[in-house]
Length: 310
Length: 155
View 1: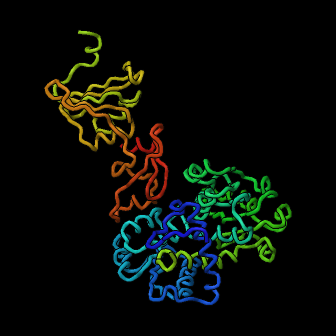
View 2 (view 1 turned 90 degrees about the vertical axis):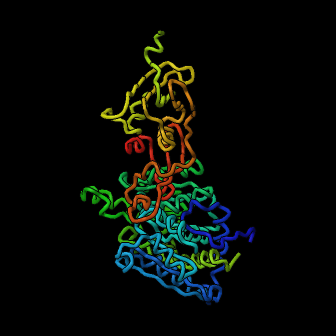
View 3 (view 1 turned 30 degrees about the vertical axis):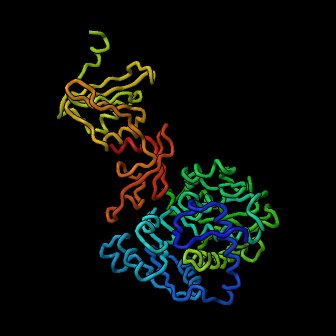
């Protein structure tokens, strides 16, 4: 490893809080977790992770649990907004100040934007943001970068497409910011209604080349990575409008005929019909592997913030 | 009397807000909650020639001295304004408003789903100044950008 960073007790609230060097370090530590993910470890024995999920989640929650168990730690928490204290009207600030006495690290998912930042301001133990409103999902962005790096051997110099719901999809906000720390060409493809938020574009446009498109075919032939997100029907005030655009944002074998042979297709999941099932068995498809990479990246983050790796 | 003093006469006690950016006098009045239905005399001068700004606006408020929070609010929309506190026709205090790099507690985030708008939480809205002219702020909690019009709407 080139350089080490001490992440002990550090909150992982936003990808914006990281330098490129720190992200590179996290990705290196993630790589070193691969064998431990296979055989398990005692690295975090005696440590307790509290999962506070005020919004439903399957993958992220299970992924953090698996990461903690693989490192020998334990997990407590809840995964429903109707949980007693919340139902009684307890504030998030109070909840974290109680839960920090039971745990060594808090993983939080919350429907309000900025919730993880507020929780981190009140909690003495490190807080990891597992998704806050439509704003950020930093650990997903890190596992996306890890997957790209694993398959391409680099992130610099790549042509990367983010496609789908770029307005409300929190994973693409964090990922776009993370990618802007590298030397990439970033292409944003979405219907007009779901274009990337202006604050995200403002943040990244001075660092990297960003172009916006409504037609994927304009840029697919040169792309190295295609990151697909789901376009949700409920985002459209007019159903007719939704029906009109949805077909343009579905990836199938016919679309991929125009792509480079070594293109990789990623998706934060769950998928509905934006990637045809026929793509799953091709070498393009790396979206299920992303979830596996999520475990090693989260193992790395837990080990780092709990001071097991310095 | 010269034409100048006729236009903007001296006040006995109160505040003169000078060097307001052109066209912002009415916004300053709004920010200070002045509706003309109570309080002392309020004089508004617009498009006044100024050596410093070329053209400026001015507001004179009789019988009221601004507090620091009010000064901060003015800084948000007219960062070059000067505040003169007048007692017995004399300027006893003169200060330039200064837009701080962090604006806390004065305005709210525009995003309803931002945690800083939650009534349940012990949280004070906090913003970073991204640019002074045009004024743009970034929410500390949700990263939303507030434009000048978003800010003016709140007063």
